[in-house]
Length: 271
Ligand code: SAH
Image (cartoon, rainbow, N blue to C red; front, side, top):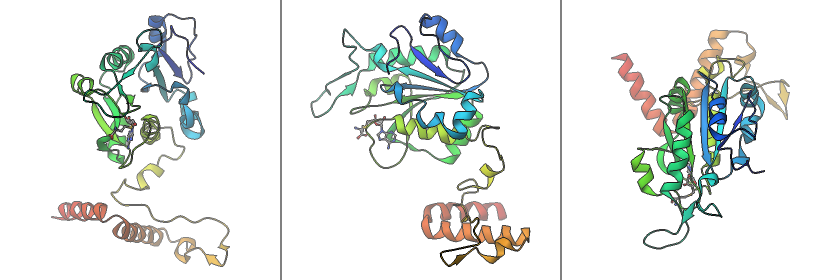
């Protein structure tokens, strides 16, 4: 599915875009004031909202607890074929996204971006995405995300707009779109009202600098395995202590980096 050529963006959620609207009218109508807004510049607009349109994030999108504006980079391409890329200066394999084309998309996005929304390029060279980053973004007005393709962006557009770079991890994807969806998912679920049980985001992995304790549910016995007795004891203080010990043990064993930071933070608090 491709978006009409005269429409620079597609929005999702409570407001539906009418394809007949002129770009400026469309942009003006798109913005739901005060609602956390993710803008995504992408060559695969049809991949959005994707998984974000399902389950809790999808419900929250429909309920206008957040909104999504998808900006099709192809629309800003050059010539009859709307070219967005060209061969790398200096030679080598692959193609590079043109700075002028990307700049035109960024300028269009900024017309309706909430004031103060950071501009982020998803890139393996970026700072790794963390829970702290998601928490910071969730407290802000929204985010404008640039999804790279091919070999990535011309460096000049990154420098010109002082674009921050965020990585999903130490591996290479074919495009930034999955990373963008991951960042949006991690952030949107922290917006008040998006998760049914708000307390759950305070107890889960990383929130206390630790990985989470294990979970159990019915049946009480499965394949000969039982639920740890303490969890059915009804003693809330004992349950809390057990969970804490499990979280610490798992973090120490699996993530020495997180554990070292946790111990340092704890020691600093205690002195
Ligand atoms: N040549 C680049 C990789 C390009 S992959 C390099 O070696 O660094 C194409 C696009 O996919 C990138 O522009 C980026 O937007 C996205 N991408 C790839 N891996 C990613 C990752 N780990 N995190 C976030 N985005 C990624």
